[in-house]
Structures are given as C-alpha cells and as structure tokens.
Length: 137
Length: 401
Image 1 (cartoon, one colour):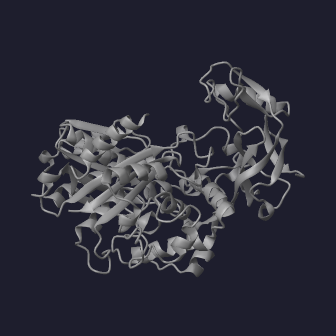
Image 2 (cartoon, rainbow over the protein chains, first blue to last red):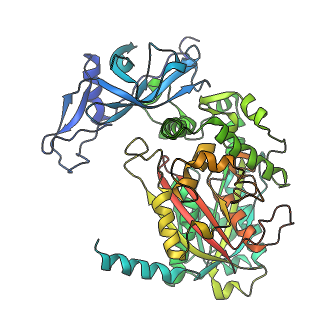
Image 3 (tube, each protein chain N blue to C red):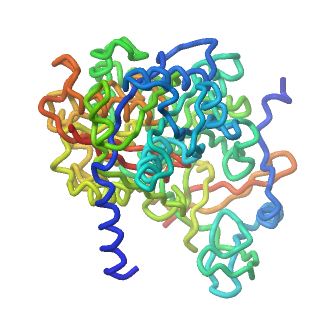
C-alpha cells in the first residue's frame, strides 16, 4: 500500500532538467535570455520575449507573493490523502514570473492574495521541490 | 495592423453576417447513457439533427467536429458511420471553444464554396468513463494518462480543471469582493432552469442552503460550483440562409462570431480575471453589428460558476468587478434581465463542452418552447465557448429569422 500512497515526483522534460538540478542544490533557478535579459517560467529553449535561442539559467531571489491560491479538500491522488486540506498557490516572484507551488507553515484559512512568501526546499524521494512559506514583508 | 487593414477586415466580416443559418439541431440522450460510446452519442445527435432539418444524410457534404481527446481523425469515423461523403471535413482541438469554432469555419467554408451543408457536433461519454471503475471515479480524470502534466503541478498535489478555474475565482474575489454567495446565485438559477427541462441530467431542486451544504472540492469551489460529468452529444446543421428557409424548422440566423486565445497562458497577465471572451465578444459584436444591450439571452460556457460571472463582465453585460452584484440581482433567471443558460447549463442540464449551449440558443431563437421555458420576445442570443487550458474562447451570436 505504501507504494501506492507515495506522492508523484516531477518527471522533468529535457528543457526543465537544469531547473530541477538547481532545486536539488537548494537554488531556485529560472531560464534567462542572454540577449534581452528577460526571464520566464516554465522552462523552454526559446526566449518568449525576443525569440532568442541564447537561453541560460540564473538564480532568482526566491522571494515573491501569493498571486492566487486554492485549498484542496478532495483527494485526487492517494499520496495526498493525509494532507487535505492543503494549499496550492500561484506565486509571483519578485523577478516577475509566476509558478505553482504549495504554501506551507500557515493554516489554509490564513493564506491571502498578495501575502509575501519565500522559497523553502523539500525533499520528496529523489527529488527536491521548491515550496513557499510566509515571510515578513 | 493599420486602420485601413482593420476596416477591410471588418468589411469582410460583415459579409458573413446572416449569410448562413442553423437549419437543424438536436441532442443525443443526455446524462447517464451507459454502454454507448462518445462516437455513437455524436452519431445519435447528428441523426436527430438531420431529421430535425428534414434532410437526409446524402444532403450533408461537410463534417466538422471535435473528437474525444484520444482519437485520431475523428470526423472520418463520424462521417463513415453516417454514410456521408464530405467535400469539407476536419476535427478540431480547441477544447470547449471548438464547438462554436466549428460553426465559424462551416460558415466560411460555405461562403467560399467548399461545401453546401455542414454538420457540426461534439459528443462525450464522460459520465460512463469516470464511473467505469472505482479508480476512475476517485481520480475523476478525463484526460488520457499520456497527456497529463508530468511536472510543475502533480508534485504539489495540483490536479484538474477545478483547481485551475478556482485560482481565477480566488483572484477575482480578492480584487472585487466577489463572494461564494454570488457563485451560489448562478448555480441555483441554472438549477431552476434545469427543473423545467425534462431532458436534464439533474432533477433535484437546489437552494442556497443546499449550495453551501455541498462538500468542498477545491476551495473556493464546492461541488455545486462544478459542472456535471455527462454522457451527452449535440449537433447543428449549417447551411446558406436562403436554403435554410425551405427546410422543416424556422431557420436561425448566424449573425456573428468571434474567437480569441490568450495563448500566453492562464497564469500570465490578467488572463484568469479578464478572459478571452472580451476580444472574442468584440469580434462577434462587430460582425453582427450589435452590442451587449441587444442580447436577449446568453448561453455561457459554465464549466464552473465563476466562469459565468467573469464572462458576463467580459462580454460587457456589466462592468468588470460588478459581476457579483449582477448575478445576485436575479438577472440570470428566466424572467430576469438576461436569462442565462435557460436549459440548465453544464452545471445542471448536462456537459457537452459548450455544444448544448448552442442547441439551446438555437431553440430559444425558434420560439417553439412552451411559455415557461421561452425567453419572451427574444430575438438575439449570445453563446460562448471556453476551453484549451482555460484561455481559448469563441463567441456565437444568433438571431431570430
């Protein structure tokens, strides 16, 4: 049974492998264009701002705010049976891009849009995934 | 694009206004239809629609449909089962925005002589598929495994369309003070309409108390904010307006249509609170030469209650941010200022990805309903389609002939 109840781990596409490798080292690293210096998420190999193919990864601050959030009450995957209710949020990083994550270290009913948050890293099996917790503004 | 180009586009769009009509429409059996595939449900709806128009399959020379997610060249299988040779045919993959897009493409194909009479339709067996096994029921996942996200979602326990749309609802509530009371006003209004529709999947009344008693799924959405899992199909027959006049039913004019896709994504820009209905609606209004105040009934893609509220704003029926007050005023009920989803919608009639909204819009424009279901003196219906990872939109404006 414990096999079935494991949480899904990320199965990265080739273009997002550097993102997950950085997370393993507890760094939040996003694609960045070497020509226009734009950044974005999720990772891809062409800059969506200027169509340059000169794409690298650069660490970001890990600070952001909650753009929006939801609270899961329904169990969609047995791995989350013990977690409901839990919060999934769209985090807007200080650098601009938005990414999905969990907000932890706060009761679901106390999460708010615009709440300042910072990245924390959590090991799940072989992977390390970035999550966010409240921070002082 | 300069102004001269734009006015040329508006001119050619106006040329399509009223050029085609919907000459026939029908559904399959709706709700729980075990043992019938999505393909056969669609074939059933098309057969009924051809009959509704008083035509034979040999009168049809075009097929445009959206296939179930896992199928290849779906229109091929549909046409084969109906014995149709099609001069124009294709399968669309714009999610819930596909059904109106099919009618838009049919109108253009007919205008330029590629076909004369085109059937458009969609069918799904989602109730049967999600209830086939215990595992399917628990996961409640309609997408084939190969197409589900592999990263940036599942590791956070983020699954399904409910959560995606609920993110938009939370943001709207934050910006504009929208409440679950407003969402409940939508769910209860549509349920009232479903109770007048003998074909509706759901037969039980829904009070505001019931709405709040429904179990939470992904907050702020409870079970009554979510559309139904249905076995359902619908179809329409599109042909030139002068041909449609000689058919069995009163023709319904295709006055305008529009499309827009916020392909930068649901998570980017303001896309989850200002949807592609804004641009799609503007294009449809332009083609029809109409505006929101001309619309007598709206059939809005209601995958979730919140999506109705934001689209009503985006179509200009009220200002952005005032959707809550608008829906809570009772405007959406039959007899209200803008009767909406008058057959019950996807929340209470059955869910066929926008296809049944089109069928209902056509029926309202025919004025063949008993008084308790008919929007009185209705001459213009606006219909919306929404899908494709939440950002793809299409709009259809129909008129009484």
